[in-house]
Length: 399
Image 1 (tube, rainbow, N blue to C red):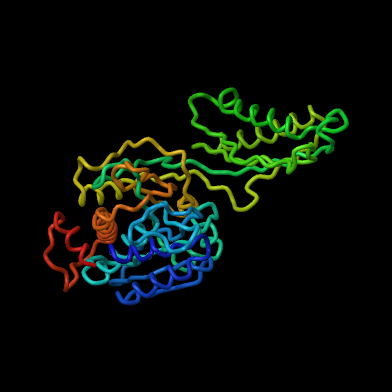
Image 2: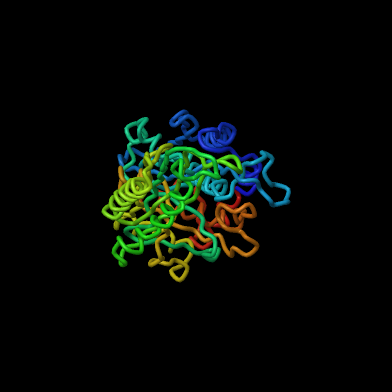
């Protein structure tokens, strides 16, 4: 798993371009004797492993894509693709699921079908939504779906998971302000879109503090401002872009309405026009909501491989977002965090100094194995060694 993880890290590919990554994954699955299907959402991979005649099934999902970040690490397996980097650990997610797939194919004792979903374009491009729209669950009718993500500053060897909201919704907004350009020495002859932009950015920050119930978590962030290209002219247009996040659909709707109302009102006050667009490049991500029964299954599997004291069942939900939420809208399931260890040295998600912790690879793969075997109980595989739970991680590390 370590070698595979580092190979994926060394050659990162961004949304819907994960061709080499997908080929590597397909080859690994085929070597394990697992049925492979390619082409969903361009580069998506689904492996199918059946055992016995049971109609029970589960899906296990890992994301494949990298980020458009220039890596600053200098170790041997650092990115060879300029401007692209596995800064979120998707390389590790793929390696853990591949390790579990190899082990289950060779030794797994279960009855039913395990679908191994390797999904492209999690980062802002909604690859999960694309796979679903192209018939993912019609072609591979899993009854339940499970996901996992590494999390810095959760100790290595630990898990965190809870029922209900685990991660926030995620939506983008773009506000285009248009007015009359003029000479910088004669502002009275035009409409200053830059002054309007400054007022608008300030007003947007009052939405959460003055319009949202303080008991409800929400974030509105302006992340881009574009306007003007010379020293001595006031431009005729400016663009403001940003994101908003929440844990409730009602709050999500309220945020959208408030952003629209403020943009139109501020623009009108300065005699400008405002064009507002929401999620111009991809569908917004819904709240990631874990179902109770599947969360209990995840806790049971995590406890079996890590120990009860290493499973936090009441973590604080994250305002980050995850397109696995689309799968959880279609099927009951659970999304769990696995600790990546200390973030010392800027080893944070989406940071140019991040790297996945190879020491947790066997634990993550063991979790997948226990989850599959617990949820699809069956006879022990004839080649299965008599392995105690405490040694399962060691066994899997051989793959």
